Image (cartoon, rainbow, N blue to C red):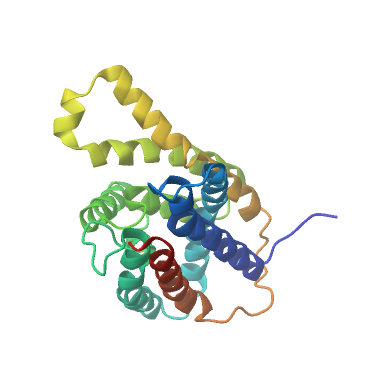
Length: 262
């Protein structure tokens, strides 16, 4: 009997893996690496939790494409993502950066909103390949300027999930390749042209490869996505994820402050 996953089951898996990732990034990080607080062995727990968390974002990208194709109002879908991007920004900054406002890092709802707008415009330009490529490039540039979570990695991954929505093998191949190459490219963009010009080639390649390898476990998410066969499953609480995202980040931020005072 073929093993199948419904849309609802995929959402629960993605939310659970995201929560594991954030607990690792916010709380376990302090136990593993915070000076004067770190405990031996916790670094292995940290990396294990972050590895599990790598599977969450590709699933959210795929679910965004599915939502885009099935929603009654794409406009309302986009506005909802933008609204919760604003609502989630303070909890996101507080949990990850320890500050109320961090202009150098924006939460993943901004990434999803830019990605949704990108595939929407692509649909409007169907059959006009060069213009569609320009739209994707514009989405990537905007995501980097806004400095949202995942940046250009996320925008292209959303496009891949949408373009290969009905082609499981190519979605797996393209998604896996992009998680490696895109992460290396994103790391290079983060360094800036000045540092790229001054860096030793061997050290630069080693840094970019090390940066890229971190995201590669996310490729296993496509094996889960491929188990989806179009069935929605038990209705998912419409606003659960939208509310869960800022609330769990706020709680993790408060816990981090209580444990480590930063």
